[in-house]
Length: 157
Image (cartoon, rainbow, N blue to C red; front, side, top):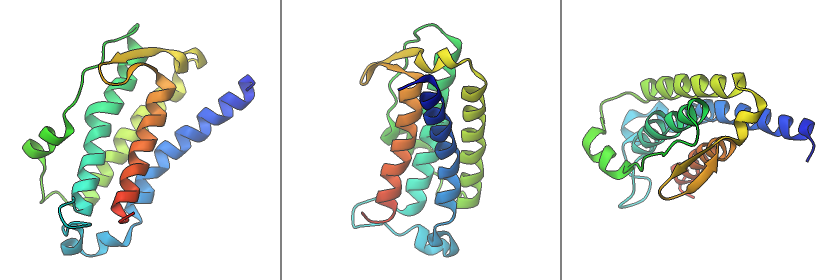
């Protein structure tokens, strides 16, 4: 893949990274607050819990990892227990619109930092206990994949 193709791929990746929040926000479940709190399937999270989780993982995990990789040489990236964090911090009363706004601001901030970085920054790495040594590009791809995985869950797939 030439530099032009790789640059184009990365720009499309960041565009997708930014658009995912709006995509979640267009889901009709937000028209009925009560429905947003009903588990998608028995024993699973509700749409609201999925949105909360997806937002918090970007705010608490993926975004800070991107920043550390951009600012530090080969940082050691901490593990994160999202289940425990959800148990301790989930706020059923926080409106979906507030979560979407928070998530959108976080994604815009992190995408802008990645865009402003020199092209070589996409190959910078950080080491995480579970995933091992991974590039900035991989972490952006992982954030997109994480939101896509939960979008499928969100839609009962």
